[in-house]
Image (cartoon, rainbow, N blue to C red; front, side, top):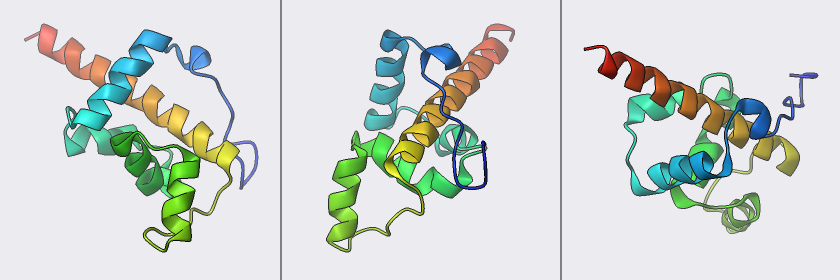
Length: 110
């Protein structure tokens, strides 16, 4: 983190995630492919944002779509801005990618 309120802003490319891999990860989240344990591991380091990020990735919802939900009182408003939300979301996908590769590596060695 740069300071107490701002998440480091790295691109998917800086995390080593290309467009096709991102689509695979997003589709897996939307379809429920990943276990709760894997999703929890992907939230490491972004705990402050995890409930909104998980809601977003499971629904394929943007920050603006979530904003409509909190304006209607359906969900709590997040304690961070749009820019930080997308930084947290990129970090989530980077963590998810890393976790899935770790699982695949372990599986291939057994």
